[in-house]
Image 1 (cartoon, rainbow, N blue to C red):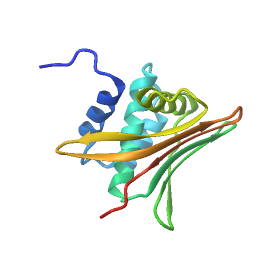
Image 2 (tube, one colour; image 1 turned 180 degrees about the horizontal axis):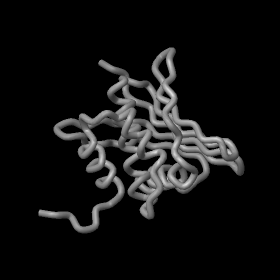
Image 3 (cartoon, one colour; image 1 turned 135 degrees about the horizontal axis):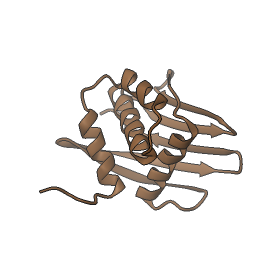
Image 4 (cartoon, rainbow, N blue to C red; image 1 turned 180 degrees about the vertical axis):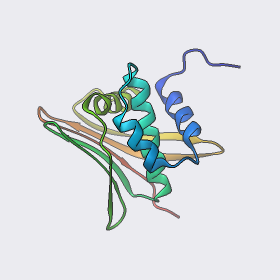
Length: 146
């Protein structure tokens, strides 16, 4: 049965399933540089690839940050950081909007857990968002490897 109008949470999980097992590093670079008419689709693609890359690297945190017009995306281990190719501003704004919509975070600052079903498993990440006039951050903290 096909779902005709899936919500963003479902679309994100479907996008993650679609990209499982691909080369996240090279694919995310292509997505970051892509220019298409569907910003939401590209934002979902970038977010799913970043999440999968972070999970593969057994990261503690995935961070999206914007200060004025400078955007950074990092995967953080205990003592190491991996910088990802940052998305263009419209994609960054789309990523933030998707996460805020999924979690119903309308305030400038907030956080909630986000559960993602990935194939036959699921993971719960702690999400924190914060925005001011010249900054915006999205942090996804992954559970301790057990």
